[in-house]
Image (cartoon, rainbow, N blue to C red; front, side):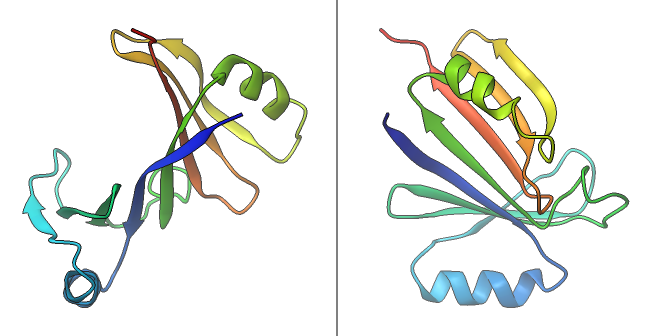
Length: 121
């Protein structure tokens, strides 16, 4: 089964330091608007998109410190496997969108994982 990291996202109380550091690594982070306030910077390291947010945490499940987006080949099968873990929270079960399928889960440490499977052409 093939998977591909697409995006890594960090919520940080030290966003200026993080942006400076990751820009030194070549991420090319640029400030972008956030609908719910706070600051956001987006860039990339190679093929992986990097996002930094400065969002005040009201709940670990609403704005985790770290989240990732992973492209997979068989999301339905993966979600069937994920359901067997009692320590996993499913925020959004398998859903079909115009561009593909998506699920969002929280791992045992509270990290958000967005699983996507683009529609095949």
